[in-house]
Image (cartoon, rainbow, N blue to C red; front, side):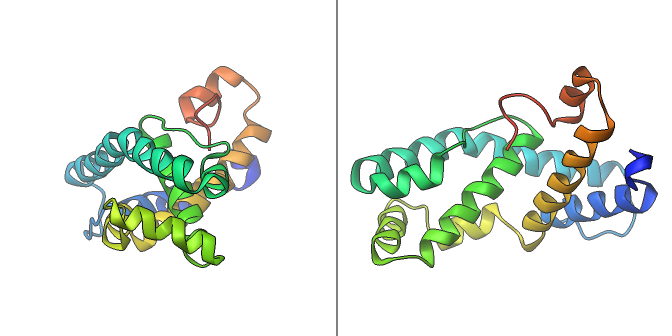
Length: 163
């Protein structure tokens, strides 16, 4: 990855974004930072399967066009991939909230079911989007420079759960 420009500064940026997304405020990386990051990933990972099912069921029944928009190419996954998938889900819900009357009606349906602004804000901090984009940037570079696909799985960039 060094050939693509990945170095200590980019590694530190990724950790800064991940720690910011988990609410960790300390300046140095230590065991507590790793624990908090893992707890945040676990929380999102635990939420995504049931959260996706709830959202999908409501939208599929009452707002099929919006359901197709939200869930095309999106499915629950595990570990860090869950964070990326939830970020994409939240991005799509944000787009609906700014969309047509029908899109906003879909968001109103979700609000009634508890998938409200507060819940979405809890799942996403301001840094989660930045972390998602940082990951996508380097995942695409890794696909170019890391040619062994078995390494892709170790990096979390290949397979059916990629977002």
